Image 1 (cartoon, rainbow, N blue to C red):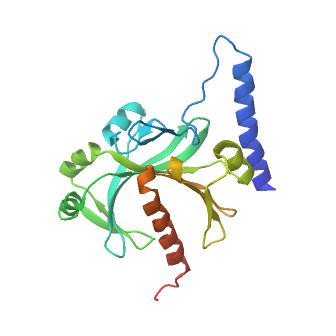
Image 2: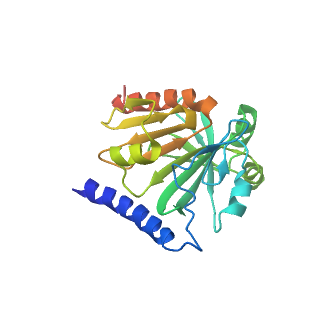
Image 3: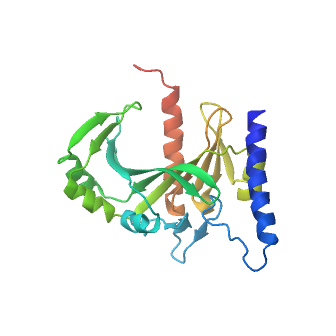
Length: 229
């Protein structure tokens, strides 16, 4: 019942916005920053939420998004893989509130230099470690381009809404916990449709989509492995 109500709320918001704009011919509403409004540049880069992947820098995003104070950290996984991420907090994008996390484009040499001069190390529930960056490295991180976006909406989606606004996926990939990934390789988008939790939208450029799918598969398999094995 809760899923049905949540889905109806989404539809009601969209219909209300459309009716309001239709009744105001002189000042129609132009809905922007919706998760399905994905465009592609001439160079093949994905653009969504005003971010052009692998081009827009975190510093440029801070100038575009008001009152943005990202929490930047270097994360090291159990297998030693490093990634530089920024948590952007809860944001109102389009009609909906969502948590937004971005990854920053950085080569191994730069990540190694960051980890060798970190301010502190904090263990995470996932088993990863989070390293806080020095002020010098924070300034460097601000100038790096955004390579991927993780968008976690507070509004609940279901299959009907995904089909309506994102179309049928090219492929559906089962998740170990009972959900399903809806894969849109041409748009660089993978959506986790989770019946018991929150939907998660992953955005990358199309050429990096196969690597994203492989990563999602590996993470799914790791969740099936009991601790200590």
